[in-house]
Length: 278
Image (cartoon, rainbow, N blue to C red; front, side):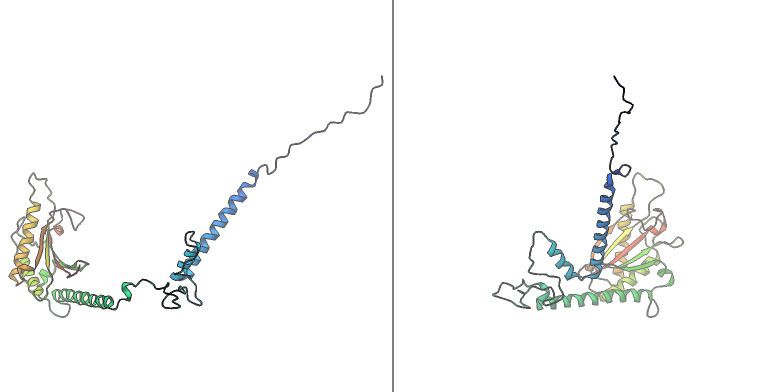
């Protein structure tokens, strides 16, 4: 039997894995999604900056799935400028486009709003004038320089707040009592005299500093209330009608004005000239 000199043919099949080492190209899809999202984000920022409020409302109505056609806002700048063609101000047809009346369209309501705004402006001016007179902005102050050192004022939504507080070298009361020193009487009488020409109600709030030693029977509540009442009496001595006082409260040491709760600055009184319509 003859032997063949030819070598057998060996066929090798190599398995090729597409994208080997590149995770199959899935990163490209993720990157494309990221770029699309960023483009949408920057387009949104541009639209917010380049459109008016009416146009933005029209765009929002267009993409709203529950309102395929909006009769109120179109957001456009042509023809009707984004207004409904059924509006009574444009092309009212068969009575279907009459909008509901608003408070702003009511002449009586507008007149009331104007009067209220004027009254509030006048009241604010009167409160600011009290500040100016108290500190002598237009001339000489009614208070001594020593008394002025104890006072700060601020105008708030509730009204004019006149705050009188202790200084390290000068206190409003005699020690830890409710007996007023001459400086407190001076401030109370002067403020009472100034407020006689106003009709606003007045509130007084007393504050005291915290004690360095913990006491079983801490008198801070009683003391702060008594000090507020002492200010009320001083203001009435200045001619202020007692019926003008709306409230008198004591906050004890619960609302310190200084970081250190034991600081003399926390011994203070707040006179609030309440706005007519706070």
